[in-house]
Image (cartoon, rainbow, N blue to C red; front, side, top):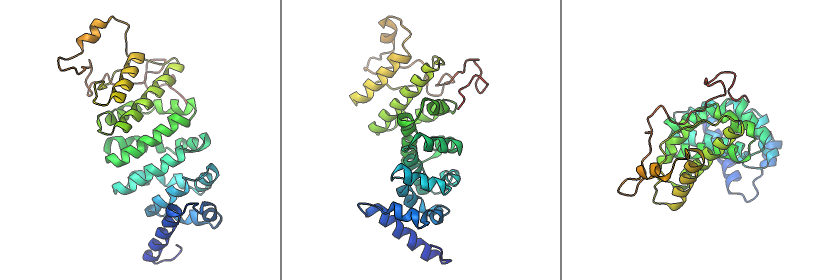
Length: 266
């Protein structure tokens, strides 16, 4: 991999990837000891190989992070090749699946704003991996780390995944939204927010998850008549606010001004 011949480098990287992907017990520790990581990281084409390295133990992941991995991630996430972006998102999802210190490093390196951009301009496969990045933080991160996400346009990004055909992705998105609203509620900063959630779905799990979310956070306590008014003749549900409305999910800090001192501070 230290060769000046690009074809030789490419072959070496492929061998590393094969070794880390196919072997039952990948030699991650051996790669770390021999200094392979510091050579791999600057190679933008080696994202899958590095992704396998950070899929190991927390200690192995930390060795890759200590070698400066996160410095290169924003460029990878903005790469013109969709395959590189997808692999970069997968790589970051492996890091956020680690410990809270490693999630802190992802936050401090400004990676998450780049991840949210993927929901708007990335291909679906990359968006799916980006969803895992957020889900891992929501699942294993601290309340403060979840609160950091609320300072970003997180809901605007996530709502794009509510219309995909993959039921698992929709459910994961609803779980993320629910957790973020719970965190907002813990801080006493939960405001009425609206988004077009399609509560009628052919999959009962999706319907139930969306219905529970609306019942908990969007039910104003009125009688069932208002709810009935939103039910169409074909059995589907209508929402009061369209997806393009300015009334979509917004986080309102205590001073009622977005981005001011009252906002969540991480």
